[in-house]
Length: 376
Ligand code: SIN
Ligand code: CO
Image 1 (spheres, helix red, strand yellow):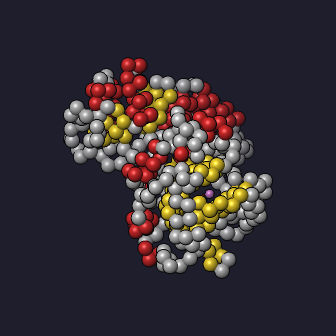
Image 2 (cartoon, helix red, strand yellow):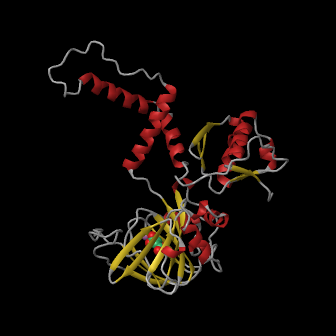
């Protein structure tokens, strides 16, 4: 891939080698001339919705105040008031242009992508000095924001606050970002972004699963898969003698528990399925618009495109979409993998699908996970 202004003249390969997860990169004019996708009232309207995750942060007299959405307009301070910021999460699921912006960052595997967050701030507004467990590209879209960042060991937080604020922030760099500029930050770098003018910043965030959370999500799905596949004979304790100490857990039950867990994790083929299902699981507030009952799914000689909310990944014979898995015949694997990689499939490829893959595509069209491509 070519060098790109998005990465300050680096190619995606150079960026991934030299910076990703390693060190910050300030990129002047990463996306020159980029215009806000949403005007202020449109962003405020999203924050008022109860199916959208939003937060309001205000600083007054040295105190932090945090309010969670839905945030109707009257819950927001006046535009003229300084020192407040509104954060709206998951905008890529709500706006086609926002989803399209993410396309520029697909040199990183989709499995790592979390979402696009938009923040609005009046002068002095920000979320305070903190660190994240995310990789993030902070694209300045409107107004100026001053970023101070540092790689400090001391990540202790101030006690008794409604948000994570570093107790001792030690910035090493100090930059003012103009519209079109972008800052890449690896996880755990301390940072503080303060609005200089009325400003908007777009955060393209990438999740790094923690092992405990990952294990919990995988075990949950492996247990479901165990229920679907194996015989699910209940614990039996015929032969249990009468006990003088009813509080004690029987050893036999401990062994049964151990066997249940071993069976859920025994088949190495189940783990990739559980992982793909989890990675493509839509967020709790994401809803699709299914086709009306009985509507035709014929594509009429056109291709198909993934809905902006759909998450689609693949591994071996498995294709995952929105938390579900299908096993794809060899003849259709390349086409469905292309649908995941390019988020569209042209008419030729879509017409050539075998019966079972075609049925999956029809199901996905009916569920609103895919649409007929009107642009092709
Ligand atoms: C913001 O855009 O105000 C916050 C982004 C961040 O610091 O993670
Ligand atoms: Co942050």
